[in-house]
Length: 90
Image 1 (tube, one colour):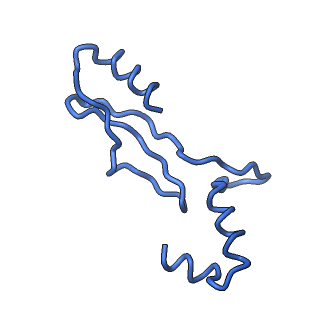
Image 2 (cartoon, one colour; image 1 turned 30 degrees about the vertical axis):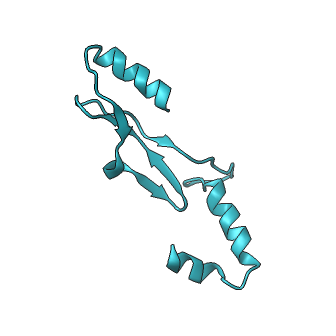
């Protein structure tokens, strides 16, 4: 993500000497997974969103689940915490 966006930024604005930082306002949360994008501190460059998680291959329609979310659900299924109370504390 960093090297790709850095290269694109330099191609679009070769004279800009700004740094690329994570755009916290545009972060997208998907359970425990996140989608992030980078933006320049000086110019108006904004990169595309990158998934910082792996997805589970499933059949059917709809959005695919993140592996970390499935792993968490499996982990709490056998504990006394339970699924409902773990979501309330998240």
